[in-house]
Image (cartoon, rainbow, N blue to C red; front, side, top):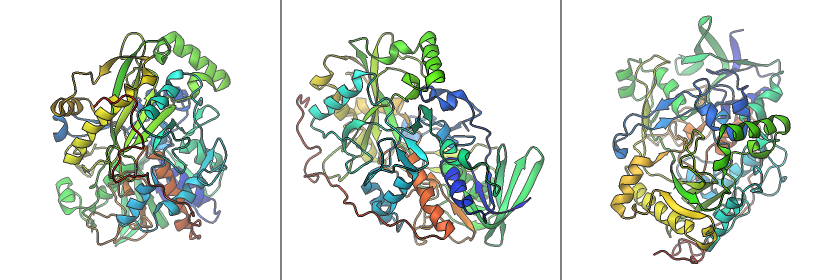
Length: 562
């Protein structure tokens, strides 16, 4: 069979959702194409092993940026998931919807119908929150969400929250509910102790459907056009190049790096980019690959004065014992990503919503899971979440196996530089509150010698890393916007039967990890594709902090370091 009604390119966070929802109608013949293979691997399934699949070529495309001009020419890693579940098989499993004001911003940027009240019902539809549904949370959706071990297995989680409250910030019981701002427990896409990728949540339960075909290890070279209509795709399998026809739509769900690449290889994009790559132009659309955004973070690390951190669990014997318990019972330390407390704060007054995010980890370690110091320590991952700098993604040739040219232009805008200075100083103030005194030892990094603007700037340039949240390269917006690639229904401007549905359509980055909003976008667009009425908009208020025009936080710190 070489004809389907819908061809979905990429079995990631959006592709699995769409495959599930569209194929629920037995009259729809659906093809889901994935360049990678199966996600069946113990390191994918075990939450605590999150560093391993990201290091495997089997699961990671392994992209890197070009030398970044704002980071002294450093090249930054940009891992993207490969295989069923896409990046949801290699991410940190952190579940953050974003702030309500993020989606109001989307609508203001031209994404009509994407305000918070429009999006909330789709967040709820996707979610099965372990504590059940309410006004803000979903209780019976496909995607399992929990709070790990509920901070029970380490005292440092609660201590971090207490320090934040002492610093003058609110405590929030549910940052995915009415109040994001503040310190509280962190949520993760884990169900019954196992990583809840979109493949596990959405795809595995419906693989038996006769109207759904899933092809793995097949790389889509291009979208085929009949005039201005997307007619199908050409893909490479073990048998060679195969053309498959789409009677209804081709839907690109390959992510913020690969979706613009696929459009460009298909002749859709800037004439300058296409000419340089030797690709014949099919449709001029200069925004393809532009508007690239990403979150950055640093690790703020401290020695721990008491032997309570997870650093004594990083040896081979401890890891083996944790793994054995997880294999037998699916619980214990193996059932968590260990980011069990967090915070969202505003960097300055005049902001209606937070722009800095914290992930607290009761260990001082590297991303590969090895300790960064002898003895005990802890760290907090922190970074500004609303960057002004913008980058781009461009193909170098028509060859689908060639890596793209990626330039994020990190740390270029004056606002971003100032945000990082505030971020360092506010974090240091939080960690110096009395609640941390029994545990906080010497500041390992940045180190107290990093304090002036110049010292902070230099250290940040050499130490910041991507938080792995690229977005915005096929921006949603009105046709009058020169950078807009898709309309409010995620249809590509100027072409028919072609959509893009993934993080690339975000007009701007939300305040948080992006897996949850990608799933929400796919849930919402599924209704559009199926031609059903959208879910009724929520009748909730959008919280604005008291005195936001004049106050950076609600209270005053117990220990003011100024």
